[in-house]
Image (tube, chains in turn purple, yellow):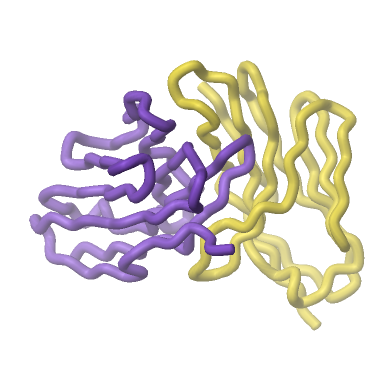
Length: 111
Length: 113
């Protein structure tokens, strides 16, 4: 079956521009997570969605970051006024239990 | 604060040379410890979940073990295709964050033919 998909796979943007990253989770998975992986660092939790509950935004690094999940399925991570330190790989994962299934990630480069 | 530390950062082995990767953790309320494999340009791929001290799981040349403070990923007679970054993550019991994972920085394994 289809796994988690993310788009775009690569995004190059200029400092100060807004970007949107998309995640399509595995069908039927109620939980969806966003993580960020910076060069030489481990994965860092950003935000968590579970069904219709309010998301856990405790990992978002600043108010320039936001995310939404429409219809309990597709999620979009938005970064406003991008900065060079936002350059990283953004990974999405979904789950229906303890095990999380990851997408291939979006590599964001801010020039 | 939950912490996960992996060692070594990088490991080079000859094909057939067995070794172990370490993951030490400091958490409150461990729900599970996860091992993932990550190839360049790809997302992490699930390997194992361990839930209690003393538990062991095996898959092909890999065996994961768990104590109250650390986990080991043993690689027996590795092959070049085992080259990847191995990530350890802990899942803790938190009311608001569901099953969020806290990751270590990974061990980059290279197996030379």
